[in-house]
Image (tube, rainbow, N blue to C red; front, side, top):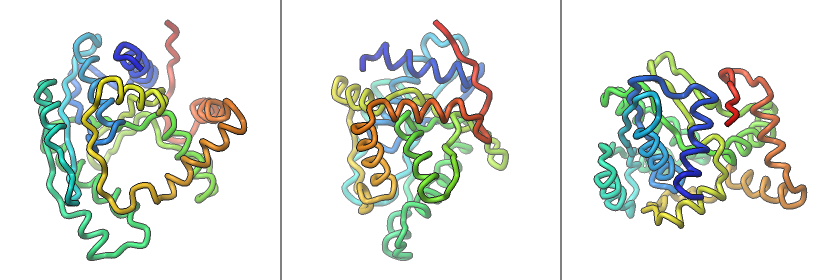
Length: 244
């Protein structure tokens, strides 16, 4: 995926779900992975020509694991002239050493979001952008069906009234394969996750299951995605299709 394609697919999601308003201050959650760095590039580029003026800053919640090198990401943010904040925590130690959680992902995600939201509010931002893409949307729906017995996936835009904060997901229409292509084409400084649970989660199982389903039934992922965005799911905002 080239830069112009990234801008196009990101703008489609932003326009159809009215994700950005004039004067928004948007925090970009940076995990260090390919998805969040791709989102950083997308919003940085759109800032220059999107009709509604907005600003961005990048925030990383450091879980306290060793061997996480954020220096290349610092350098990238300096190059793009995007303010970058690293929130130091001991979440990894609490989850894996003190609590010894058998299902660490749930507690870790809750604590990480709490730390991120607190940093966002301190920074004066009114929105946070997460880097979930099309594959994430479908995988979340599959996980919800398999483990919860309901047809559900996260919304493209969600207002958190307790935090007075809006979550947006501008990569909604981006394919993971295209994000991987963008990563390689532009040599993104990806920081590999040092989390012990990385690659051994229910989400990883669901990701591999979806890949298998799509191999055996070509186009099934796209049909599932269409079912989600056309399914009038609870909590989803109205979609206004843009035809260009």
